Length: 76
Length: 76
Picture (tube, rainbow over the protein chains, first blue to last red):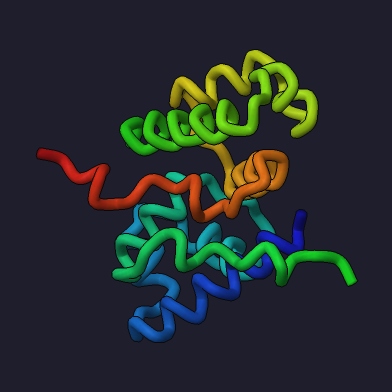
């Protein structure tokens, strides 16, 4: 489900930019390693729900709003 | 954030029961170890977003609907 990680990472990146935060600033605020935050946004890692909540909190959005709609992940 | 894991596990259990599935049947369908599924429902582990999507798919619900509202997790 690497499609999911990519879609989730893209949504996190979009929301981070909307908040005018750098990737480094977000990583620091979330206590997540900077290089790991880059991997999250590129969809290279599967994050835990707990990290999702931490990131959403810093981005002032609902965790659910960062989840890609299932319909977008269907093959085809 | 073990409060989050507990609230998420409780919501998964509620939805599983609504689907009239046993914990074993859900674990098997999701390719998740049976004992691990028990730990998920008891909130002893932090699951990945990818597992959340797999579980939601088997429970015929939206992944976002399994996420506990942030307001329920506030201390106090």
